[in-house]
Length: 240
Image 1 (spheres, rainbow, N blue to C red):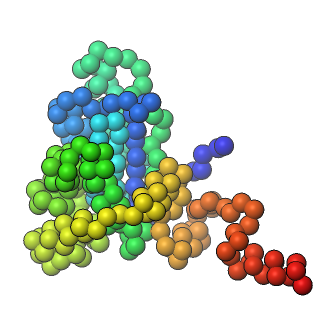
Image 2: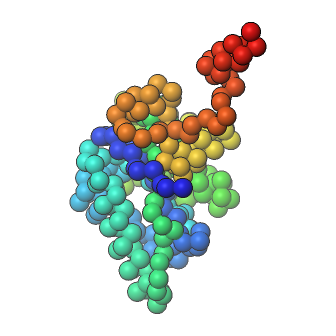
Image 3: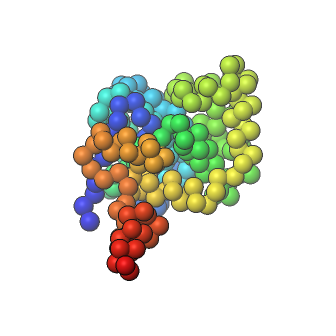
């Protein structure tokens, strides 16, 4: 099945996942994490991409980003991908690929899903059993968004800024969001949307995006949606 073209809406956040080849490790030391973040900062600035959240796991990376420029995110990811492969191969005397193909991405509805996706990203180490609380993991944006450390790589999103009038108030309210678990259904929704390049958002948001792009933005129903009004009307007519 052919891959769908990437979606781009000016200024709209995107959730990205880049995995190691065969789910193998891509970070082997603290220095590796530091190098990746430093180059992410360099290339995000070069291509004018704002980074709102991130987590570097042992074998994959999650990013929440936005930009005003079409193609900028792809250029950023290609640049850091090439640089980091050369860095790893040189430092660990290895050859060959490091990444599992191209990165996955989805457009995110800021009003309804952005803060949830931020939590999803920063809770990865907890779900993986690496730490008990996201504050314990050093390689994620929770260190800024939830702890208050200054991370120059990050640009707070408007939805995060609106959590409070001061940094202290924003931190308290953001940390409070982590008291609520993300449901299994929402976790699956985020994962599927990102892996399949569907839009992650409300029905209204999806319809708005659909009018701006020339491709499907969510899966088509197979065999008819038995809960839809159209299907029920068709079934009713067939029984009359």
